[in-house]
Amino acid sequence: MTNKKLSFLAKLAFSTLVLALIARSVDMAEFWASLGQARGELVVLAVCMFFPAQIFGAYRWYQILQALDLRSNFGSVVRYTFIGQFSALFLPGQVSGDVVRALTFAHQHRQHERVFLSVLLDKSSFLATLGFFALAGTLIAPELQGIPGLILAAGTIFGVALAGFLALSFYRNRRLLDFLSHRVEGSSRKPGPIEFVLRRAAVALSLPRLQLADALRILFLASGLQVLNTIGSLVMAHALAINVGVLDWVAIVAVVAIIQIFPLSVGGLGVREGAFVLLLALYGVDPARATAFSLLTFVLVAFLVTLGWLVAEQVSRGSRELENPYG
Image (cartoon, rainbow, N blue to C red; front, side):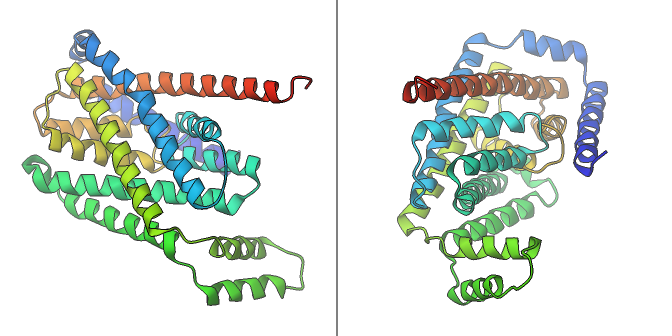
């Protein structure tokens, strides 16, 4: 069995174990009662906000691609955005979906360095936004201030992600580029992994810097996306009678989103529920209700992501048939 399969099975077992522990600690009658008492109109409203948020996220990536002079139609960007999200449902962590998105998009456009740089800019800008929202919320909310190290962790993530985004946007070192190019060209032996990495790094360092206006636009769009995600999840929380202050909710959603990025479990299952249970307990929310909120949100998002992926694939297939009606 390969290491990748072992890693996947380990994370799947971890998800199952955490969910089992949560199930043992919650009142299942209260869990089902919370789901049964959900306000349907608010659930529908939260669902209706999903697709505008995804289109907004795809538009942000589209703007990054344009800034890197990688031309692609917006419909294609939307399609690959849904491909990445669909993959993340079954892979460890949201970052796994980003890898799938980058690989499939790069395969089509044959500009691997630009595509991967665009995804790194996309993810680092969003992570910086999450860090900022988490930091701002924890500084304001008294309940969250009592969690050891949360403010330090949020501040660290914000600072490191923002520094990474700025470096990816503006740092281009001509001497380093010349050194890498000379090393690759001067190698007399058959190209191996080291030469492959050096060649990719040299190409990446030759890519154009972002304009300041483009970088600011990307950060602004990342903030807008998180605002939409926060509002949608807040509406869903109110549907299940979870009443938490807006600024507190901003921090809670950002913290949970940060946790989900890392490949700790398959599809974030277990880790996400545990995080919501622990954070919402500070506000007097019963663990059963917090778990019901998290799992209901996941099921609806999984359904909508799958629907969006299927629709995007069907539209793409129809466009190809129109362009080449004779196959």
